[in-house]
Amino acid sequence: MLPFILKRIFQSLLVLIITGAIAFSMFTFVGDPIDNMLGQERTMEDIERLRAQLGLDRPIPVQYVKFLGEAVQGNFGVSYRQGREVSEIIMERAPATLELAALSAIFAIVVGIALGVFTAIRRDGFVANFIMSASLIGVSLPTFLIGILLIYLFSVELGWLPSFGRGEVVQVGWWTTGFLTESGLKALILPSITLGLYQMTLIMRLVRSEMLEVLRQDYIRFARARGLSERVINFRHALKNTMVPVITVIGLQLGAIIAFAIITETVFQWPGLGLLFINAIQFVDIPVMAAYLMMISVMFVVINLLVDILYAFIDPRLRVAAK
Image (cartoon, rainbow, N blue to C red; front, side, top):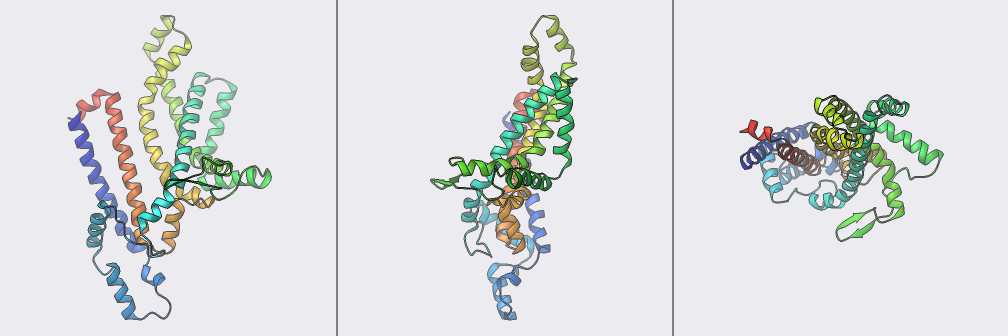
């Protein structure tokens, strides 16, 4: 098992370095941050001095290596726009995004698996067919449109839930949470449903198809012939064997939830990392953009690594194949 884990860690580090280099090189197409930092009366001397001070006069590979060297030490530089440490800004915004992503993931996993099992067991029923038809909405409609529809229905027409912002938050150490206030919990509902709806429908349809496939297997027929109850067959035998491919997809979707939070946070003006990244693009705030993209890359790589390891624990054949 240890060689398998070491091999996966090495591959993950390689992927991280390559994706970071691609993302860093793309910053050259975003614009010149010097234009936003200096006023209209700037001189060529001011431009050259600031460019040299920020290290922007060096080649992109040199800038990337310098960024990696400092990022490993937890130093992501100073924001061009705010003049503050990027790590400090990210720590302020991270709780909002992580709480939103956590609630969206719980919604997607719990509701997705429950509906997937239900539609597989009751596959010919009216309710199951209705759920499958309605799930096409979650798969087909873009995230921003779902968010706007939810705002119109629950905020504008019914007035039940807030349409933007995080509500009242409570400081717990360095962490700011909205879980401990009523307005914070209300503010979480619409963004978390918007963010998790696509993943929920995806998980639901995957669980349903995998479970239908498992229910056709010979050992399920043998279990019925032994007189086992349908509950035991469905949840102890069928669902357990269904979860192997589902775990992989869930792991990838958890990373996508945080990455796609950019759209949801923009629609709901959620003060998280996604909105921070959008604002950083507008002002060509390269240190913030680089730190955000590296953080997302690390998150995807770590999740994939954990899924691979978990997958190997569940299915020993993968460990043998990896040798």
